[in-house]
Amino acid sequence: MKTKRLTVILLAATFLLLLPLLRMQFSQEVNWDLFDFIVAAILLYGTGLIIELILRKVKDSQKRLIICAIILGVLFLVWAELAVGVFGSPFAGS
Image (cartoon, rainbow, N blue to C red; front, side, top):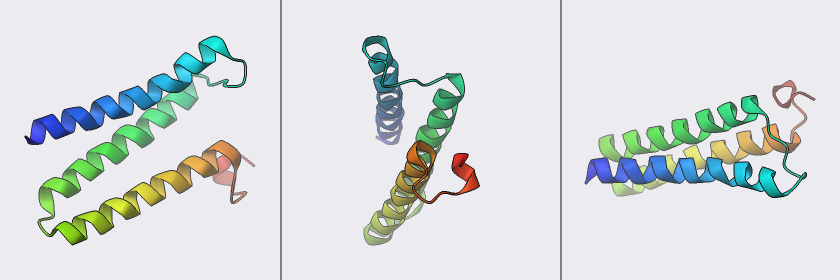
């Protein structure tokens, strides 16, 4: 069961990485280079593996839900900052 969940997480991250790659083939609006894919892969796979670790180690379901929600929230904030510079930090290159 645990390996099946990990496989699903890794396949979902891979699918999400394929979306911009496919979009780049049909549109000029998405223009990612290798570095963008590497950063996205680190964020997606890292988040997935951390969530899998939390799901395996934390026994209380309410605590698991809260911790996973916080992790996903941090992922979305970092992704938004890297994508459009929501906060205007040097982290996003602004």
